[in-house]
Image 1: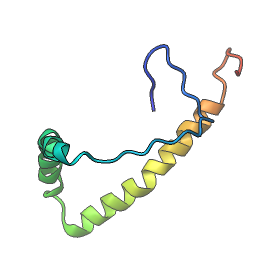
Image 2: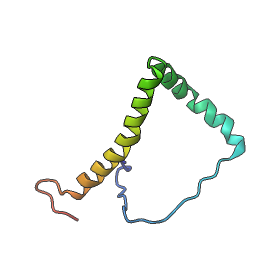
Image 3: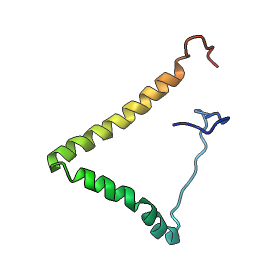
Length: 84
């Protein structure tokens, strides 16, 4: 996850935020994301149900693996740079 320039992420920040949908906004959200949904549906239609199951299984496991790798990389100081 990247942060805006000049902003440092605090990985030990344990604050929580509760997000609740605003019913009046759901139609607008659908309007905004519908092009992405349409394009993804078109792309996925090229695959058989078995192939889609494999793809979904891969992404279900790959996402946490990439997050773990990102955390590992963040903890490794870059060459020539002191660890904070």
